[in-house]
Length: 197
Image 1 (cartoon, one colour):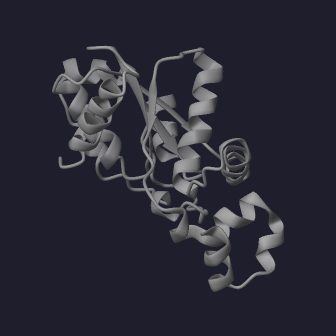
Image 2 (image 1 turned 120 degrees about the vertical axis):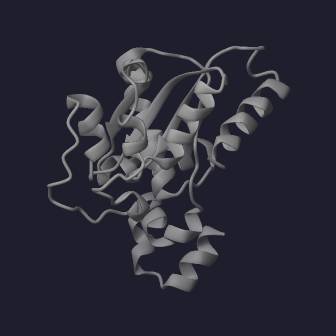
């Protein structure tokens, strides 16, 4: 529930900066395994915030992607350890808050789009965004950025879109730095933090 404020704040900031007009719909991309943060965006939408698509980004533990693709929620599968460990989840407890709902609300599942990013795609987008903009993102945000690229390619939707950045790259320094350049793998952890800084 407290995370609802993230999306209200993001929309208010976009409006204040003139990036959206009053009531113009935006999309939201959230990297998630437990479905909590994106559920907050869904609640914000149902409270009246002008959100169009809720883009659910999964890593290789693609329980949520499979749910949105097939309608089946199957937690009996291989568990994969990835470089986005906060999303390494097979039992997505917050999903129950969405699926134990009224038929009218179930019809709104069309509001969601689900996809996933492989480890290679996650690393590639970290490198790409860094080289293009100088911005260094963590592995979880990179999953969202990669899925957003897939969404845009599939749908040609050019709505203003907010990507939820859910962690600091300093928390996953080695994975982030290795994505930017494999040469960093030979450095020690403290050296890497200095280099990232």
